[in-house]
Image 1 (cartoon, rainbow, N blue to C red):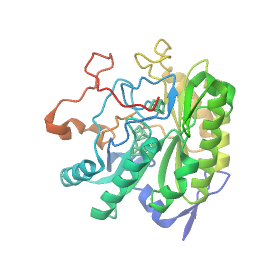
Image 2 (image 1 turned 60 degrees about the horizontal axis):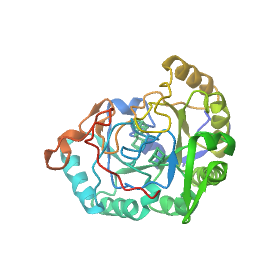
Image 3 (image 1 turned 120 degrees about the vertical axis):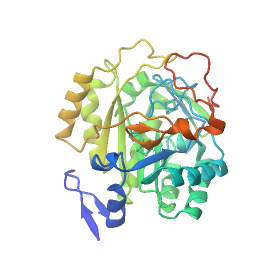
Image 4 (image 1 turned 135 degrees about the vertical axis):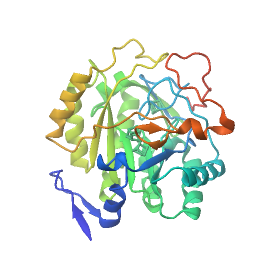
Amino acid sequence: MTFNCANNSHAMQVDAGTLEMTGRHPCYSFQAHRHYARMHLPVAPRCNISCNYCNRKYDCVNESRPGVTSEVLTPEAARDKYLLVRDKVANLSVVGIAGPGDALANWGSVSRTIKLIKEVDPEVIFCLSTNGLMLPEYAREIVQLGVRHVTVTVNCVEPATGSLIYRRVNYRSRVYRGAAGAEILLQNQQKGIGFLARQGVLVKVNIVMVKGINDERIPEVVRLVKGLGAFITNIMPLVPAPGSVFQNFAPTDVAELNRMREICGHEMRQMRHCKQCRADAIGLLDEDRSQEFNAAGKKPAADSGGSGRERKVATAL
Ligand code: CLF
Ligand code: SF4
């Protein structure tokens, strides 16, 4: 049985099982976010690109508030933490992997984590967040593992704008800078989104709105990813990360953000309830309980000022 997602003129076929999962996914369904909890497992410390809004001392800004750092877990420790949390958090429906680096730059650990958790709980919904660089390599495996919800951050459609956002792209053991790197990244994002959508995966596209950089061209991004079969877009504010290239940029104006969501809402479904959660977030989107489950009861760093308590995250660059 399939469902025709008529909100997108590029109709996509979603099977009934995926649709049922989506009704319990707090990010993909506004209604679900009041009732269903997610937990993030921070098993992905490395990243393969350098975004100008990122400071790699912290979690991936493509999905998280800057200034938030998370512990890193091995796949086995992640499975054990999942079992502990499942017993204590009601309506835990989704296990997401959202950093603290890029999920696909750590695919060995990420895929092992998914397999280990599936062994103990075949019913849980898995969700991944990625910059999309490695999607052409891993999209098939993602589908084979049964992951039906993937977020890709796409900030622009062409390399010239990309060169203002991405400093470096580390791809197949070579470093590409400026527009050359952006071109590889954008092509891989687009290939990956198209492939996943054709396989019935619901792709959420995050877009970080940066005034003077990509803000005027966000409707083009939305049109492009709609054409590729994405399910929903999530236009997020820039929250300038201390120590990043964009640290002195103004935070995205809320009225301008809402106006852009409104404009793009005529094109396709918009997420408006994102909390830019941390890479080890646990609970309802409005009620983070991660500190309760932090290793050995240590208080995790959650400051925005780079106070020196940050954990140094391994990075590929
Ligand atoms: Fe996590 Fe992201 Fe999956 Fe949700 S979060 S990997 S899609 S389960 Fe949700 Fe958090 Fe916003 Fe992300 S509120 S930052 S959109
Ligand atoms: Fe930082 Fe990598 Fe995430 Fe970009 S994709 S915000 S560089 S962790």
